[in-house]
Image (cartoon, rainbow, N blue to C red; front, side, top):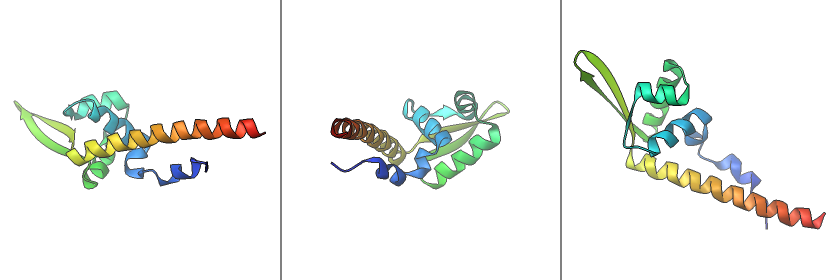
Length: 112
């Protein structure tokens, strides 16, 4: 069995970056979330969250919409269908790599 570790370098960097992984994972758990909720959930500053959301939107993973509640603007963010599939596939790949890494370690531990 070949070592699965080199495959880690091939992960989708748009999703895998820690802040974006937190954002997309949170969004995968709901239909959409407002900006301030995502900010509190991830602990990111407004500027950081905005920058990461822009990258995710440019990559086609999220949709951003703005609405008004009275005179107050509210920004909503949701995964696109493609984004939802990409996040799910990313976590499946991570889980698979983890399982294969454990199996590799057990095999090579027995050889030493």
